[in-house]
Image (cartoon, rainbow, N blue to C red; front, side, top):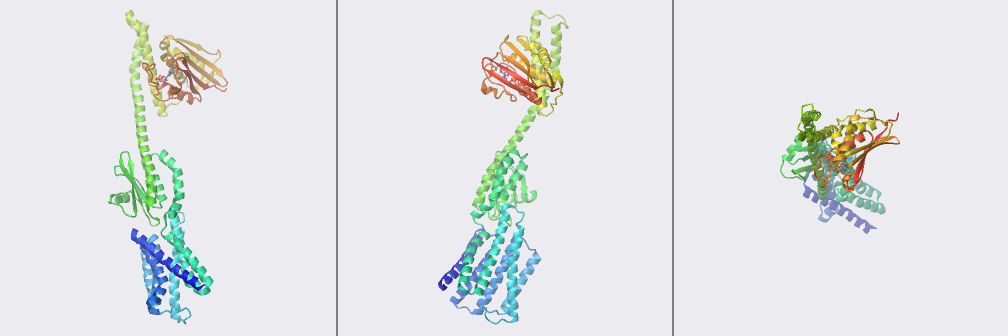
Length: 580
Ligand code: ADP
């Protein structure tokens, strides 16, 4: 049993030395002031553990060893509190007072000439000194357990976990010290001593993990953040209204993922797109600093207009910026870059769309005046109101009138399109007979259909529906003029108006060129024209069918097509009938 105990004692000492050495090498690699205090605390604790056996080997005077142990003990407690102070500041005055107090306690302890033998008779001064030392150490270590634990509440996952693990680390230290210095000797049973040693041995690696979180622990902490970010990423990248919003939302997510409290994103021209956890001014000042520091991660963003930069700043509770954090952020940066470019492109497309709509609006209004004048005079010439026209000239006048009608109908489509795009197309619905509206619409484009035989088949009774008469006629005119445009001269065109259930149907059938299945998909898109040898010489802007379907749908109806290449097409407008 004694040899087991001896082996375990050596193992505990070795574990402490290893803990101190690990922390020391970690500090040498990162050199931050925060960790220096942790190193001092753990080195002094491990020195304390190996002091007695080492002193026995060297043969140091007993009193000197006891005093040294006392100083190391007090120093370890003080350093632990200072480590906490570097995470959550205590305030200058309080920190200074604690320093003075600790030095005083150590001096009193040394002056009391404490004995290392627990059985020795203690003077009241010595007892008081022991009490002071123990209370001071306990306060130094217990306060951070609660302070760090409390500070973790409500923090993002990684920072919160880091604080909780630090709090646990402190608690582990208390358990280890109490177990090895108080409980072990007090129990004085070898079995109890073995159990205590085993507990201490189990806690030491956990303490290391909590003070210097290894990769697996950091990954575990950031998992909830990553999950959240992943599920929010789609919305973030696709629906952020502008680049600044996208950048600031992405930045907050990225910082949280690695437990950083602040960061900023610069655009390709160096301007500040977003700052998180610090002001734009502070961010600009940091951005101007050359190079990188250990507490700052710079991740390039390869934007289309040039290189931007995402900078993430470590805070007191940031676990560590290791290779893993860098690779996660790099992966995330690719998504942010795509998102930022997407917003830029969308912005450009919207601006282009706007310019196109503005142009449509402008051009159609400007052209409408002259064409009205032209059409007016042509009609007068055709009617003979302007005197006799030579027979040759008179023969082309109907064609000119038809062409003026065609231009007019194109202008009408352009005006309606720009209205629709800007949300200005308000329907003026009234109870109307769909069959009569259809007949009137065809009548209006008489010159245009003069080359064709248009047969209208309508029921004798009216088909009442709540429709905007002007807009409904636009649809009919467009369908009939398309039937004219895309079928041979003289070919018949059938217009059937019918009622089925609670709907009115206006079907326009031609025996023209027809449309193949693939092309039918793009028929109803804006500016969607089918490019083929048969349509190459027909004029049109590709707006008519799109506009017609939009109008049909605004009436809760629809516009559909059935067509076979070479045989002809049937376009069917469906409108709900008035329920009264
Ligand atoms: P456009 O002003 O070009 O006629 P539309 O939107 O009215 O624009 O029609 C879109 C395209 O659909 C046309 O360019 C044409 O290729 C095709 N199309 C429309 N109506 C017919 C039809 N009755 N027969 C064959 N093709 C048609």
